[in-house]
Length: 322
Image (cartoon, rainbow, N blue to C red):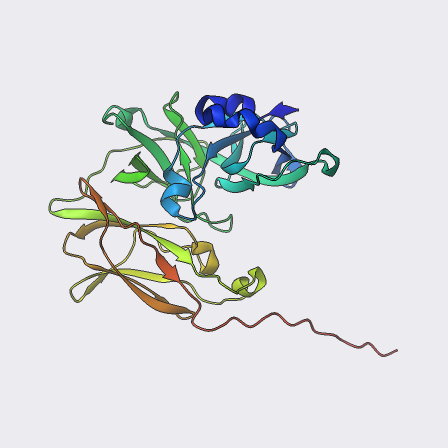
């Protein structure tokens, strides 16, 4: 058995000394076409405990990888994880797992998590890394992984200049400092097996970039009810009578929860964010947040609430006559 708390002790510190008594055992099964891909790795990086996109995706750049062929002992906390294989495969996006602080009961055995993998491409960050200032690091953000889950982010480890990412889906490289976006670099959609050099990007003269995020208000709503909601979320940034759209539309329906929304090259005078949709209540939010150079981070969420209480799925009984 591999013990995750041993490789991670360097950045979890002394607080981890008591963790083994509460650690939970998890088997990560990386698959291709539903068959286990032997020789895969599972990689972890911490997520902030709060239900906040900036904390979930941008709080840590410490990535540690272990073989995925054995059960792994994970200490309490909230972790992002993804799987990869040297044959050019990677899971679609990092996923979050939360390990409780309740004492581990060995008799319960271990939990199994199956993680499908897909063809990958490579991003080369060498050119942009040279322009980073102290305290800055690089993250690949996936705004729209089609049919493969929700939006997510993947930090570039400090000891490498290249990063495997899912092929055929948009990737937005970000420069991050202290859990905030300070630059949005040029988006790419790489093909399978290719190596793409990431290019530096700045907003056009006189314009700014705005980063916001969506939070789903699911109070009193079950998972089944959420999945039954029909209708995408629409977002706009208002500048006077004009409405500007994000670079990528939010993932459909409830999958938009915790997604970062990126508005590129917009007037600094744009003052209001709007969320709406056929199945969603309209919400307006003033553009007020932390500004880092020419990038504005709006820390308050755009809250998506269903316009009407979703109907609970009803089981239908069919009587068969002989």
